[in-house]
Image 1: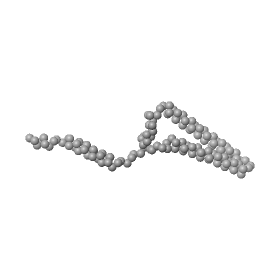
Image 2 (image 1 turned 90 degrees about the horizontal axis):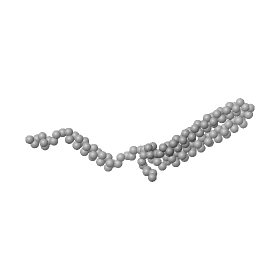
Image 3 (image 1 turned 30 degrees about the vertical axis):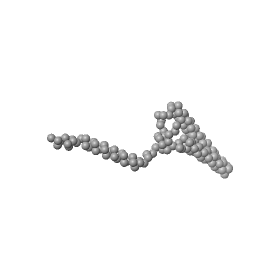
Length: 134
């Protein structure tokens, strides 16, 4: 049962198997992104170096730009799917925000605080009727 307007993330209520699964997925995706990033940097760096020192500059430049466009589209779609995952995982939840207090609640709190401070202030003083009763 999903409760709305409550604390979003309670790690003590999530099973250790789910924690392990989430950790494994995050670790795998992080390693894959790291490997792909290094691979693409290495590939495009070597390709750019080879393209710079060949005789057909223009054809290689167009080819490099085409491959860079493919890489940019890959990054765009990776971030787009990441956004979709975040919307699915966290989209319908409200964040931890303090609600503005209701006026009646404030009045009751002030009234109770006044009673507490009045009783605390008068409890330390002696009762006047017993002092002058003699």
